[in-house]
Length: 252
Length: 207
Image (cartoon, rainbow over all chains, first blue to last red):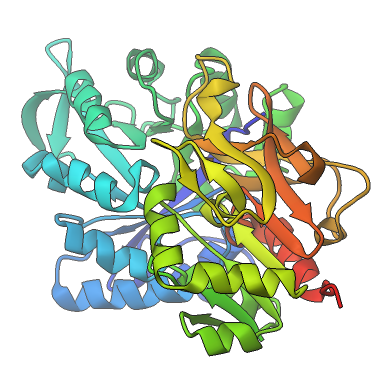
């Protein structure tokens, strides 16, 4: 049977991983290549690189780095950040990305999902959604979670799937950074109707949060996190061994 | 030298790099002379069968691959490249393949329960058939590889060398003599995938 995926996410600015990462034995803790290799060796099922650079120079550095990562790491790579046009898809796919994650760019122009899916296949288009409860309704936030678009998150995800998104990353702003577990309620609402894989993001603080996620919501396909992996609070080999002991199918 | 056949579909960057990582030089090429001179041939592919088959035959490279296969040169089809080795596909109509592997390409929705998501995407375990194929000589039963597909190889019982369970046992890899195909992506399957490519590089053709 297909395994549950564990996905570390790295923020890259001007070609360097920001926030740094604290691992023993890693000489350059800001190198996307060294970190990608580390995660690949420790059993990550996929890697996500978010380009948080705003300048054209930074963007060029990002694609250089992406090419280097893709030539040394042989697991699926997803790239996000600054994807606004089909040309942006083309730019990162040529450098070795396997999937491309869209967020604000798709909010501005939902047709981007359709056009990219038609050109590169549904499996290539990941719709990333930052959602937050506002007066009891899940709303879509844009610009890194700073701007309430007023859009209903469940409707937006529905539409995204209809337009050709092959995967959904659901990031709950309400639980993000709190480290008290994934937003099971929000994820349940999405995984109930989603016909494509759903990746949970935001809120993981410990191994138990992943166990609870996959046991409570068997329709969720993957768990994504950043800082708990980067700071060694959760180590992927330990996490996967625990998931397996709990009867959850993982790749070891 | 290994020739990765470039007939205008998909991005072959990772595939080329994966051979370099295991110490083999691979060239991405659409030049018939280079393909004919290569020791081994990789037939890649992503996207829709009809479009890929049309490009492959229109470029003349389809017939060249058939010719080289019949001479005994090792050939490995990957993902859609594996599907193209079959006689025909029923992906949105009926389309002719290279006919190097007996069987059809059919939608996985024909055989899996309706509550499972399509495409079959992610890491799944391989069940290796006996006798063990030479391209799996470094693998153990249950090793995981990365899949992305909505169609699968059917009616190819004699050629199946590995299956993966996704509500039904799906064809994961096929072989007939010197012609091999993997439904999954060895170039995206970590160390396990690289060891399959290495074993393929070490395989002998039929003299």
